Image (cartoon, rainbow, N blue to C red; front, side, top):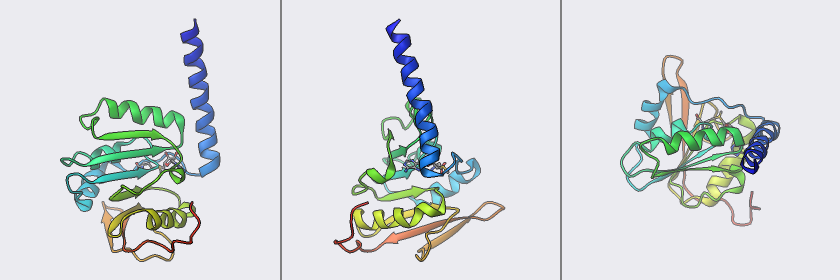
Length: 185
Ligand SMILES: C[S@@+](CC[C@H](N)C(=O)[O-])C[C@H]1O[C@@H](n2cnc3c(N)ncnc32)[C@H](O)[C@@H]1O
C-alpha cells in the first residue's frame, strides 16, 4: 500500500514539475530532428575523454548520439521531471549508459567548469544568459553549440547547415572567460 502511495506522490511531483518547467522556461519539449544526429555528431568531432553537456536534454537522444563516439562522456540537464524520467530510463537502456548521466536540474544552477562542449536547443531569450554562463565557467577554447537559434551579438566560429531545410548549428569558441566581476548566474 505504501509503495503505491509513494509511486503516486512521485508521479504527481513529476506532473507538477512538467507544468512548472514549461511556465518557467517557456521552452517546449521539441527535439533536434533524428535526421540531423549523425551530421551533428560528425561536425562536433568530440575527442575521447571529452565531456559534453546537453543544456535542456529532453529525451536525451542527441546526447546519446554525441556519446556514441568512443570515450565521450555526457551530462544531460532537464528541468521537466516527466521528461527527465523518460530520458533517464532511455539512457539506462542504451549502450552508452556507463558514460552518460541525466540529471533533473535547472541548467542555470549547474556548473559547466568541466565541460568541453555545451549543446543547446533553447529559445532565443535564454541564449545570451547561457553564453555568459559558458564564457564565465568553461575553459578557454571550449565550445558552445546552439541549434536553430543564434546567440544575439556573438559571432560563431562556424555555422553548419543541416538537411534540406538548412537548419543552422552555430558553433562558438569560448576564447576567454568573461570579466571576473560579473555576477554568477
Ligand atoms: C527544445 S528542447 C531540446 C532538447 C534536446 N536538447 C534536443 O536537442 O533534442 C529544450 C529542452 O530544454 C528544457 N529546459 C528549458 N529550460 C531549462 C532549464 N532552465 N534547465 C533545464 N532544462 C531546461 C525543456 O524542458 C526542453 O525539454
